[in-house]
Length: 91
Image 1 (cartoon, rainbow, N blue to C red):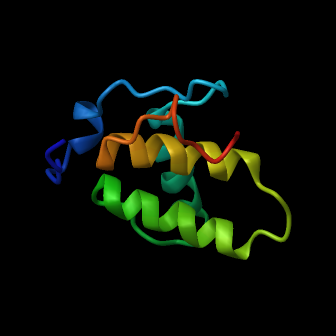
Image 2 (tube, one colour; image 1 turned 90 degrees about the vertical axis):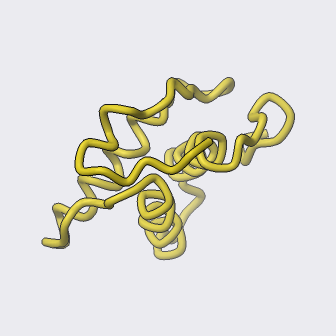
């Protein structure tokens, strides 16, 4: 999947949903955007940067963070073409 890095890359997001959780790629991007807003930083400029934000959030969580795992799964599927039905963090 080609990387979209224009200012409106969010409008070109593929439809990716998690097979085992009610979670989509749009949810994952929204999670990264919200986190950046809370720490007074600009929103991620690409899917890869959104994935980095969620990875950082997971590394600082002191519990098993199911939302973060689902977010990383759908980001990996969109960026790397990962088949979530065969390999994901939630199973």
